[in-house]
Amino acid sequence: MPSRIHLLGAPLDPITLDDAVARVDEAVASRRPTLNASLNAAKLVRIQTDSELRRSIELCDLVTADGVPVVWAARVLGHPVPGRVNGTDLMELLFAHAAERGYSVYLLGSEPGVLSRARAEIERRHPAIRIAGTQHGFFPPGEESAVVERIAAARPDILFVALGTPQKELFQARHRDDLGVPFTMGVGGSFEVLAGVKRRAPRWAQRYGLEWAFRLAQEPRRLAGRYVVGNTRFVFLVGREVLRTRLGTRS
Image 1 (cartoon, rainbow, N blue to C red):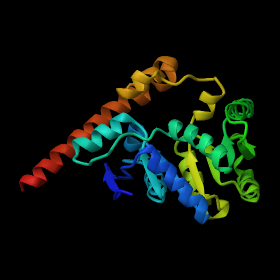
Image 2: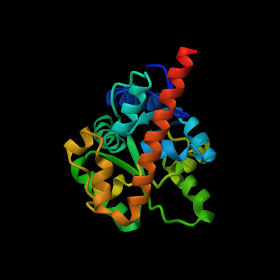
Image 3: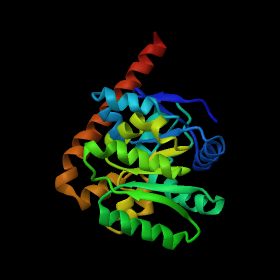
Image 4: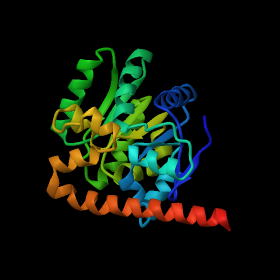
């Protein structure tokens, strides 16, 4: 696998979707706990001030470029990233791969109703898939240890964590060894997409890095600050790093 790079203070593995699936196979074969995090522009902005989130990402064995802006930023800064490895795309590919290889999966996160609808959709698309268990994400902090114990007892090959940022990253970092799951990945709101509660951006919007605009149109009140302020901050951070790199090279 290509050597890991660092982008705006975060690790990043310049790989393809096929490379990521190969890492899953390696993890399942060895039973070695492997954590995956998806890196997008919003997360890169957040780690500038959230040291706990940054540390949890640094602990991950595989960090993938979730969004086109991350790929663009890496290339502008001289890193040969082959393309994005979108979290939802990887999740859906792994459902098919798990059904084919006989891997078991565990679904953690979302509201109870959304989770049950997501499971039904996964089983409709992949009748042969083995779902080791499910757990909604609205459990109190005092029950977290019991949730972890149930997941560990189910011995899934792959765990999908559909919690928000930074909850999913921190959960993975806290319980890596307790869970003992070969491959764990955070999938954010992807269960809501599977359940039909939310829609993904059209392919053309994904290709040109405009998924954020599609999400903003669906939830303007909730996401306006995050995207308008966050994207501006992201561009500033990339521009500053470009200047720093070029000045350093001249020196």
